Length: 380
Image 1 (cartoon, rainbow, N blue to C red):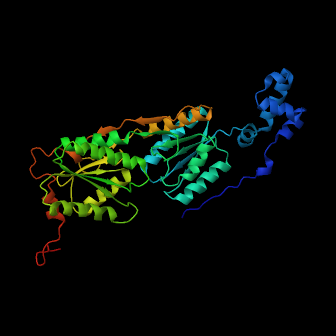
Image 2 (cartoon, rainbow, N blue to C red; image 1 turned 180 degrees about the vertical axis):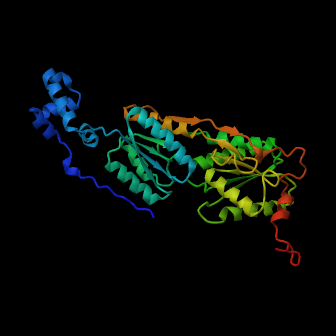
Image 3 (cartoon, one colour; image 1 turned 180 degrees about the horizontal axis):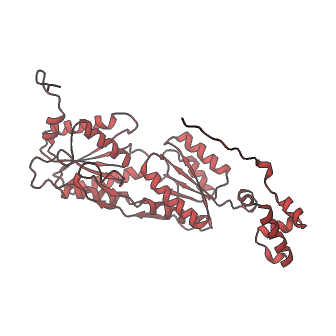
């Protein structure tokens, strides 16, 4: 049987050593201690510096960085708002941002808004109460008023991956148009002709809109092929499977003789598509091609491996903090946009259809997922 052992500290918040105690023990004024802590050593004699330093060490005094920051107008705190911490993209970007903060002596405060407008407003207010010096913002896309107010106040903000209409903040993210073009061109080169972009709702989210634009631009170069965008709700159980299944049947009903592939708009959509295909007993690439945005830990492990469009997420987070620090330190130049390049990782899920006359055929998918006629149901 397990037992939890809780050890309570005998030290309370009131036991914290203060500047007044250091001054009293050292036999100096509080002003002298403050000057020592602030690095104003030229204002103190060698004897006083030595006396104060030894007293601080003996008493174990730890200065309050928050109090010192508020007094000097610098807290060395940076706020980061992410639209959805469950999205693997957010976690990966966070790693890069945190590393950059550590490099430059800043502390990162994270708020997850859960794609909720009210929570986004609350998080902004909370971070403001901590006097953060700047803000990284991965907005849910529709709550523009608070950001415009920050812009009018010249508060340092850098956007992650998503534009906000009417705001002239710097942006660091993926070149989404280029990434979608790269992925779509790969699918076309592999012989897929009926390609659907499966994406979360497009409205108000510039990164998704950019991926759709790149997808459609690449497909426009092949008028003999069919392009379609499927908007899905990953939070609604079974919705992705329903939408994808309807797409397959719709293409079959239109008499298509093409080869089908799905382009997943992000990691969360990728997982739902993989589950949906499994529920329909469809395999890739035999039944359908599959290419996904975001390189996830499980991507190489499923079937013959899932081809992905990898984002330089760590670099995005790191570069965003470094750009934010430039703004914090006073630069007031025109808005800058830093778009990083994607990387295509090819695996079995997008294997070529050449030499495989039955691979990823629309009619083959329809035969597998259509209900059998009455009286011809398989025995269980």
